[in-house]
Image (cartoon, rainbow, N blue to C red; front, top):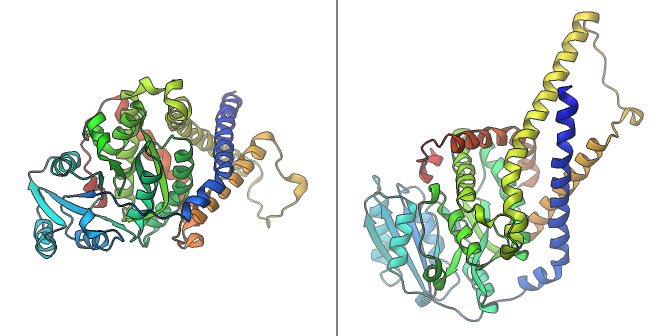
Length: 420
């Protein structure tokens, strides 16, 4: 009795998922010529830009981050870098001071007591007067053309208020980082398509660039359940401020190396999404907020719970199969035989067919994401790790995020803690 009910409830999830994938793929291919045209364009106008680099115990990566900023293909007199040391306990401040001494016209260092990333970024924002403002996490690195690629979108369309980059995992080495490499690759497709729909869900910390007037209209960064980048994106959508994606603006970030770090990072992200989405629930199903309010945000919120349900459905099915195998063993014993494959016995029910179609569309989206980016990573080494492990990993942090949100547990995750 239980299984037919669970089985029946899976169909709405599969339908919504398939509709969502078809909608995104259709949107991308409808805009493919426009996207290809964007790739050939170069900006000839260079507004002034300030990049904030908030730091907390980043002595291992700060130098590389600053080197990548200094190597940007952008007029030096138009680019300012503000390093904000948020009460580091290691050599972060000393490294920052060395770079300030060597580049006094471009780099400024501010030090403060530890107060969180949002306070550090706001301090840099208060000290800047540039036309554009952005942030780069101190464990991320930009490609030389990244800023010019982003500025192009701001120059050609005055209604664009922010542009987000194309993010990759830098030099994935561990098993966990290879999983993240594929995850970031599929997000390249999603973020580009969301941009075409004016429905980008988050302006990520690594190198999202804003017009200065954005902060004049909607205010500065907030703590926002330790996901300030998602909250400010919601605030921009509420104010009808347009966000685009530059898929040629490459940014590399160092993903967590261990399952523990990966788990707590995704837990923070998932819980931040849930709590911020609840704070901005007035955006749900409102025509005035376009595709973001009518479609993207509600679907993302719904999929958190449907994802947990799908995981429970799969676990229940596997458990039932184990019970069947055990019962058969107790009755007739163990009779080993070589496995055979015959198309006559191939499962052709509706759910199997829909699942195969969805998986095929997922592979197509992954292929599109790989072709959009100029960085071609070791796809065939990374994909098996993602395909085998990630589906079992997602319910763990989603389930914990739902429980923590429901019971209103303390949410004090620190970004840098996820690297431990």
